[in-house]
Length: 290
Image (cartoon, rainbow, N blue to C red):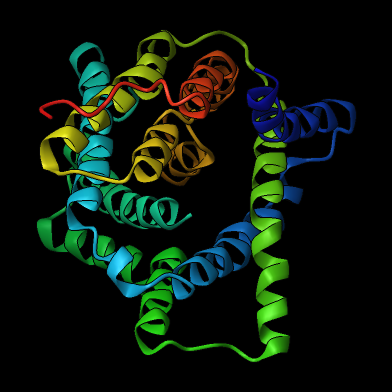
């Protein structure tokens, strides 16, 4: 159990340090803009590039793994969307890590505009939606970094020493900055009430999503234990800041999004730690249908 605590403490510790700083030092949230820009456009792309460029190309061609993780995200997203729409119709209402991030990003940046258009009382035309989605995918820095990383792995490109060290600095900053920023962002969102949707949607993310992924991994192939455990841990993570970013972008569901991040993070202290313990002790159940 000490090993699990040592694994979980840095993750949750940085979030709650950010939360405490956000509560103690009332700096406006506009100050987070450059931090968010650094994380999304600089640090995370450097991380993706370094992971992928150091990986043999054969390990990246895991089509079944990509399909399972992306479909599980889709169904968790679809279930959440259906829950809200059923009650309140309208818009008010490492290698495996990199692969999951990349294709989940592709899915979300494709799916969100379509769902927002579907829920809108004044839907956009299909051409407008397709143009918006294509632009988001092509210009997404994580997708670009992934493509360049895969190309570099294919041609066995090695960056010069100075550039390699710069990329190492950037990739090492990605996780601490993202977790700290998450804590600060949650602290700066005053919660007047608990939206009714949150208790319904958090279990979908923390419980249903990992279960769907486990079933899909079982159906679609045989994977190395490390890849399975990594995927399950990723699926067990709480709602991330991209939920809030999308809410702000469309100027809807902002209070619910910030509440989901806050309470999802709190609930994941128990659920994610439990999954970490199962993975650390190799007690996750074997894949089904074997």
